[in-house]
Amino acid sequence: MSNHGVRILLVDDHEMMRKGLQLLLQAQPDVTVVGEASTAADALTQVRAHQPNLLVMDVHLPNTDGIETSRQILAEFPQTKIVALSADPDLALVNSALQAGVAAYLTKDCGPDELLKAIRAALEGRIYLSPDVASVVVHDYMRTVIHKSSADRPRLSDREQQLLKLVAEGKRNKEIATVLNVGVKSVETYRSRLMKKLGCSSTVELTRYALREGIASL
Image (tube, rainbow, N blue to C red; front, side, top):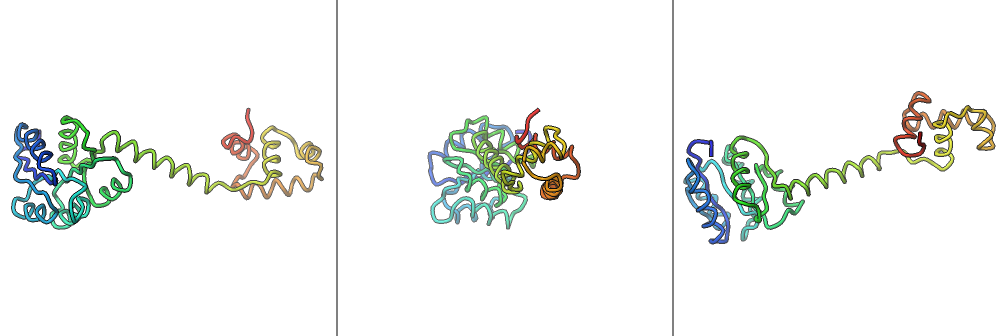
């Protein structure tokens, strides 16, 4: 560890897990494990007593979970960094943990090197997510963006799509009127309404929209 005199508190309700973490961390230069806790209440007590720089916190604790415990600790000791450990990369838990203010979120099957990397990042003021957790978060973000994009996109009728396709293909109003079997005035009206609906101000913009949405192709 590059940070001098790092004081770490381990919070997990499984003694074997705590002992394994202690062996790993005590082997690092400039790291001291100042205590262990198996419950939320014990964690709060020990944080107040030892004021560690960082906690390695199990998300699943008896009675009060690790996320709520993290929220309480950070409210009282905002400079403390928390690395959360969980059995699985559950999106709801990850979001709750990040909202609570944890600095890192790892699954318990991570390797020793990754835990040390997360601790280092947290102490440097950076957010760290293990690859499996990051994958879940990014996938949800992309799904949300795509859904939002689809929801915001104006719904076009079959006639409007047909008109847009013909415009993108470079057809003039008279040619479009022939294809659609309507008058030129009607085409002009449809075209004007379509431009307003799509927020386009020119034929070029209509064409770009049609290409982008796959309604027309070059």
